[in-house]
Image 1 (cartoon, rainbow, N blue to C red):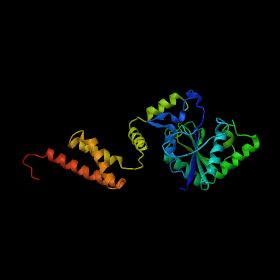
Image 2: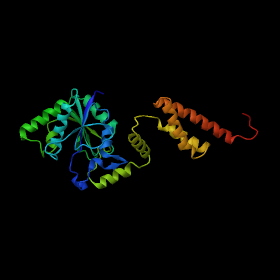
Image 3: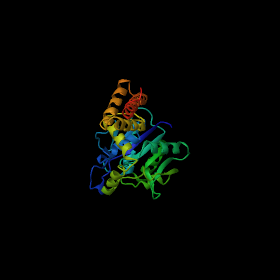
Image 4: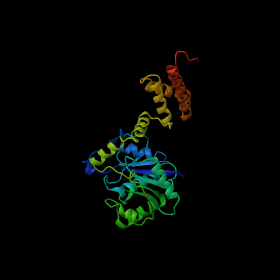
Length: 289
């Protein structure tokens, strides 16, 4: 996958949320904006069009004039900020809204791969009802500049213009992903997202991602190995041994230089110890060894 840049639009009025700070609303312990920024963490440069705030990773800030001028004015401000950033703008630009709780890096990669594998101007998501989501998309930088320029020449100003004008003359590939395209416009949407991440089969990955984000850890480990270790320690030694053992494995891995391999090696040693401990407890008094 080629290098890409990202523009995140996070400066809307959130009228259906009563004017609440939507990008800062937390779902699964993380602000919506931070969740989106995590999904596009591979970008060469990331511009957030909004008033500056604390975020989980560094970004470039931009603001449309006047503030609240709508998505096309915000998009133009994002493009200008990318052009002012060090280095040339990437050929592909991912454009995202800041209210996508289930957007993941795999979806961003999918959009970029669809764009790279096609001769069109962009690739965007369609929601569960088949409606285009222009703010969950990857566009060619040249197409972004061209269409924004054409609209500005036609209307004189981009303030207040609807998004449909932007996409009407673009050749687009569409990908259906009702989960990733789910956005939070209302408090009912927020409640549904908060409930969904706690569903069985999802909650553990959500928690681990949130914890790594909070602790500033960028480490991919085999969670299955650690869970098996915790189970063995709890069953073969005592229940409190599970959290203590996994803590000690983490500490040992850090002492060994960190990284997935160090975690796996430390976990394997601890698991073998737990198994030996359990075997001793189950052995009969006259067993040898």
